[in-house]
Amino acid sequence: MPQDTPTLDHPTLPLIKAAFEGVKFQATEFRRQTTLIVPADNAHAVLRHLRDDPACDYDFLADVVGIDYLGYPAGSPGRFAVVYLLVSYSHNRRLSVKVFLDPSIDTSGIEPDPALELDSVTDIWPGSEWPEREVYDMFGIRFRNHPDLRRILMWRDFPAHPLRKDYPLRGRGERETYRVVKRDST
Image (cartoon, rainbow, N blue to C red):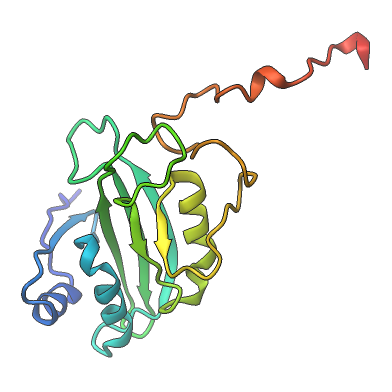
C-alpha cells in the first residue's frame, strides 16, 4: 500500500499566499486533506477572499466547528480553534481553514473572554448562523457582528460551556437536583 506523504500541493495555497503577502500562514496536510491555519486578525478577510476570488471560488461552507486543545499532547498554537470546512464545487476542491484562539482569563466559568472572539462569517455565508451559535454555546467563542448570537442547545441561563475540557464530566450540580425515580414508585 502506498505511503501517504504530505506534499502541500493544494492549488489554493499559492493563491492565498500571493493575495496576503504580509500574513504568516501555516498549512498542514493529512491523508490528502489540507488545512490552512490563519491568524485570527486576518480570518474574515481570508475567508471572504476564498469565496469571492474566482480562482478559489469556495462557494459552500460545509460546517463551522470548535475544538478545545486543553491537554493536547503535541501542544497547539492556542487553546481553542474554530475550523471552517469549505467546498468549491466549480473546482472540485475542499479546504479546512483553522483559526486558533488563546483565552486571557479562566475558562471554567461563563464570563465572556475578549480574547475568544472572531468576526462572524454570516455576511459571507448566511448558513453559518446556526453553526456559529453552536460553537458559541458549547465553547464560549463569540462571533462579532453575528445577527443573533444566543444559546442554541443549552438553556439561556446555563452556567458554563459544556464542551470545554475543563467542564466537569458530572456537571456542576445539574444531576444532584433530579428526583430519583425507582421502579416501585412509578
